[in-house]
Amino acid sequence: MSIVNHPAERDSLDKILESRSSIENIQYVKDLLSATSSIICILNDKNQVVFSNDILFEKYGLDLERDVLGFRPGEIFNCVNADNDTGGCGTSDKCQFCGANTAFLTSWKEKRQVINECRIVKHNGAHTTQLDLEITATPFSYAQVDYLIVSIVDITERKRKELLERIFFHDIINIASSLSGVLQLYPLLEDQEKAEYLEIAHSLSDQIIDEIKGQQQMLKAESGELDVNPADLRVAPFLKKICDQIRFNNAAFERKVHTSDLTGNARFRTDEMLLTRVLINMAKNALEAIDRGEEITITAKYDTGSLRFEVHNNSYIEENVQLQLFQRSYSTKGKNRGLGTYSMKLIGERYLKGKVGFTSTTENGTTFYIELPENS
Image (cartoon, rainbow, N blue to C red):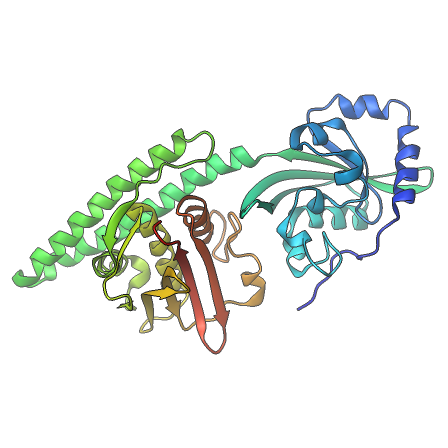
């Protein structure tokens, strides 16, 4: 698939400066744009910025000529998808799902105001962060030249708070579902099995308490930093705990969960609660993607010096879905879903300092993984 949403061609800097000079001659335009607390940009027909109010420079520490004029919005905000060899912002395959790009295209085509939310994954040093923006694109003409007025409101903090609350309820429901499955099965067990299942139920109830404590930490973390509490763990009992927790989840009904420890029960150090959250979400997504009678495998192994946990099934993720995985709130399952993959990335990379990713092919199925750094 190779979908290009906007031509790669651009106007020269001289033409950009000519457009900027022309717009500055519009009476009161600078005063009007300076009177709003929103970022206001004016784009030419190639979606390049030819004019902006000062809010953009002040909020993000940008320089007009070095960072803004002639650039497209995704390039200004350092979007990972704008760093490509197809022509920059608006030209990669993933750009077809961008809320800003869609707003620009629709506004140009239909000659009307369009309001969209936009999620930008941006480079931030060695890691990436997600920026949530509300984009309003409005077409206008001046001196027989077409432009877009684009209002940009940063709603990242509001979205972040909403999302963390929803992740909490999402994960609590996962664990409570497992606990409910154990308790429903308990009266049907033989006496020799009941002690084991009571132990599992006790472990799940402890996990619910841990989740509540973790959420309290998240809600108190104004800067987005979560307290991480590393402890020494062994791989084999940790995998057993993950398996016990997920196999009673509704998603595991008539499906099998296998574990494979290829580390020789190695000792490792990490935050057990947070890593459990990541792997449970991987396992639940893997179970939901397969039919009854099929299985998933949770594996621990060493890979290029890192401890790697994998969750594998034999299903294939369609390419259009692959392009949007790990985006906040994206899901093929409906509204208010899609937190699982995003929380894997958020917790696994920002807090556990690992690397979270996946591979998916028709031949080999799908594997989600988290690689933990040594001595994490």
